[in-house]
Image 1: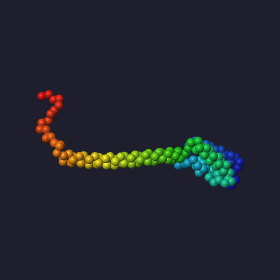
Image 2: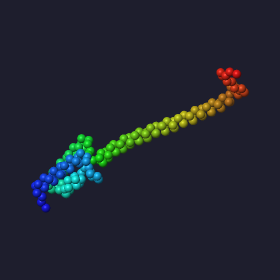
Image 3: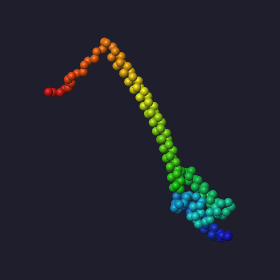
Image 4: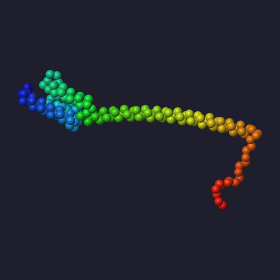
Length: 154
């Protein structure tokens, strides 16, 4: 079924108006910033945007304008913006996780070294005590029977 020039002009005006709304981020519920939504908003058959159909030049224009917005850092589709934000946040969290794991590994190595040093020092103290107990020149003082309180007034 052929359409008149007036109908085609009216359809192109509806398509351009819908295109402007979508590129401003005014998406219908459940819609995306894509050709399917554009066709639905303009009340035009989606197949008219492909091949040698009458509105293929408008599809090319829509995709060019959408790409230009995306290159400028503006994403009209809030879901796409959310996906991009979540991907960035995910990458940052992965970096933080890797840094945390490295810190945990460093602390684990430090703990292992500290325990090894404490064990070696304990062994040395035990050996020194045994050596000191076997030497006759060292005498041990008996424990004090009264405790002296420094600075008390009776």
